[in-house]
Image 1 (spheres, rainbow, N blue to C red):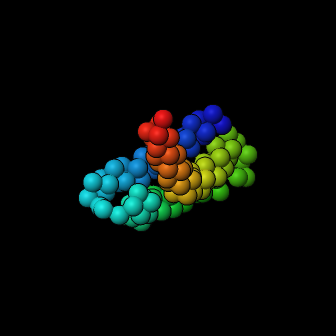
Image 2: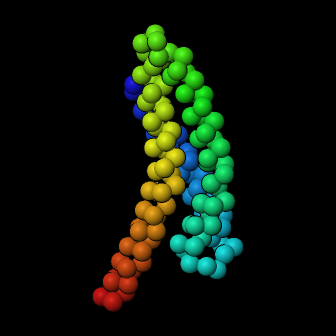
Image 3: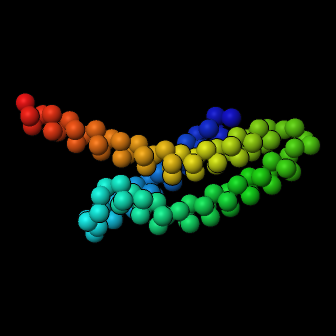
Length: 117
């Protein structure tokens, strides 16, 4: 189970890094707002993320289905991976990016407060 959780964390982190790297690439090229650049970056990397997630989900689903009657260690691992793939994909798209926008706005407000002092 520890291996499954570490794999899930790595999977989610990798997906998040792909999206944030796309944001970094698009930021100097675009003149839109920061939120619009993030939205564009998510749209550009969405197909890759979904294809990777569906492929991983399918393979781990077969692993889960094949080991279901045996009730061995791989059943628990594959179930944790099934849940983790869904949660990791969701978190990299719909949690990490809004959090980045929130932190950007918070940092800008802090800079304004420091400038006023």
